[in-house]
View 1: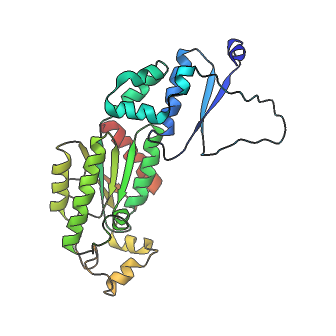
View 2: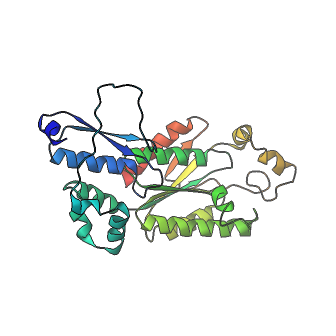
View 3: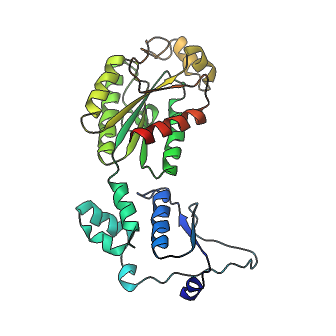
Amino acid sequence: MQDKIDKGVPLLIMVRNTHYDLYPPLLRKRMIEVAMARLKVDAKVIIIDDMESINYGRGVGYEVNEIEVPEHIKGISATQIREMIGKGDCSWKDHMPKGADKVLEDYMKQKGMVVWFTGLPKSGKSEIASLTTEELEKHGIRSEMLTGSGLRQTISKELTFSKEDRTKNFERAVFISKLLSRNGAVVLSSFITPYQSQRDQIRKEVEENAAFVQVYVKADIETCKRRDDTGIYKEAEQGQIKDFTGVSQAYEEPENADIVLDTEKKSPTQCAGELAQYILKVM
């Protein structure tokens, strides 16, 4: 292997996207690129999906080699490094190539933020939030996503759509958002949040510890009804769902949104791109 490096034969290094890893593949890719540049090794680093083996039908000119790793490094696992970081043990840097340790350190210092989406049901909040996480990942930004439906399927199963239960759900969502943001994540929280007083209170609570961005996903009620492929608006109009925002419960349009995404005029992809750029600018 070393003789090929000495001869200037370019390397192809593949980063496996295990999806469940604490650190995103783009971060790991950047760490390797910086380390290779410092070592003056001509290497192309790509991200591959979560696969366990690579097979090919005939020789195509590629030579697959196992990289030789020093003995003192072989015994160190990614889990151990994470534990060192969690304990504040800086000796983890001794187990990483120079340059790569700085990339990871900068990533861990990343300031957290809560991006709170508000808008009518079916306005496009969750779809835009999901697409925005993908955009942020391209820039190596650690992000998490919370949705009203996600909480109701897990820790808020017992709650109804009454004003009191909605408040309880928001309180849980705010608590989780604050917790994640304190650990450096950009948290994209997608909740209808119909009342101005609720949104003001959420902003006040979050800004005590992290940056806050309120996103108004704008779409009128008729547009949202046309998008409804689940039938919830029809059920609400028939009285099967009580206290439904936009039908039997009011939605107060935000007075102080930091960014407005008009989904009647722009696609979800366009909105996500616009929001991602805004987040990168204010971080």
